[in-house]
Every structure is written in structure tokens, then in C-alpha cells.
Image 1 (cartoon, rainbow, N blue to C red):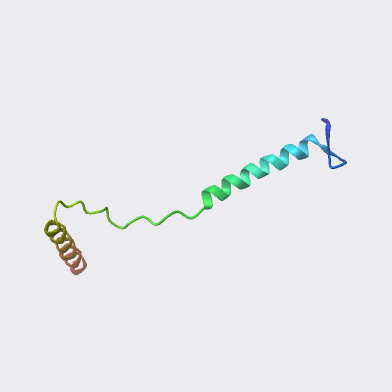
Image 2: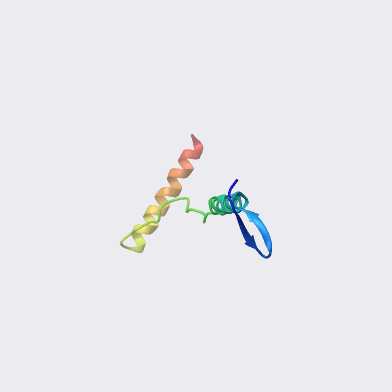
Length: 71
């Protein structure tokens, strides 16, 4: 086998140190992937040039959703 490192007065084999670091990286990667994401808005933001236009768009979307539910 390989050599040993003396850590806190104990001889630790190289393979155990390497396995510890591989496991730590895998755990950190899994934790990063499993982190909850921020919720995404259901619809894109409305970019209207005036409040009247924004109100018209919202009303149109409500009518379209109501019509879609009927079908």
C-alpha cells in the first residue's frame, strides 16, 4: 500500500484520507443540487407602457383563462 500521514498522533493511510475527501466533495455536490430553488412566477411579467394597457392585458388574460376552463 501507500504511505501514512500522522494526524493528531495517529497514522492515517493515504487511501482513507483520499476517500474522506472524495466523500466530502460528493456530499457537498449533492447538497448543492438538492437545495430548494426559489419559486418561479407562473407567468412572465407584464411590461405595459401605461396602467390602462396593463389593466387591459390582465382583463384579457382573465377572460382567456375563463374561456379555456369552459372548454
